[in-house]
Image (cartoon, rainbow, N blue to C red; front, top):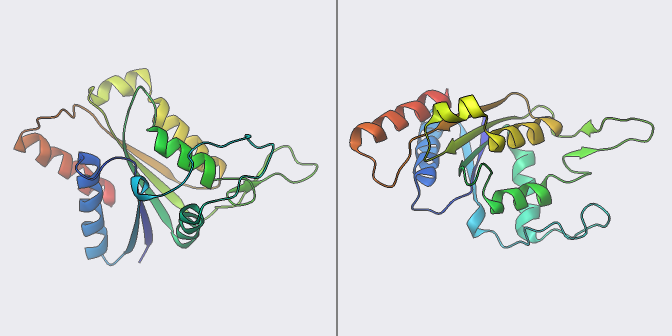
Length: 187
């Protein structure tokens, strides 16, 4: 049994939310324990004010999110690709939560940081309007950023699923194909 934390960075009527809910049902029915974080429900300042020059106190929702991350064996992120990047709310969440002393730390005399979230894995589910093959050819900076950031903190493995060709009007065949891909990705 795994402890899985699902993180949604889009609204609740989105396909990302629908896929997260499907993932939750499948993972729970397989005997896993599942929690979720819906970033739009959290109350926090997504701006890392002062960069890393000063300590910015964490809001209670972010303290709770850190506790959930420590609890989890695996994190699964669901979000759309916007302008070749993650949604701003997800970037702000990552900036604020995966901070020095929690996710990594620099030790005196060492050039590379110590990874503090070792033993955890992550999955990234990204939806885009463009076809998935386009991002395979051109690269997907959002997946690259998420994967590199999570690995920097110790997550391994970090797997990703790019679902392309997502438009406002999807027929039943396309929805069925997308569900099949998410079901396979759960395993």
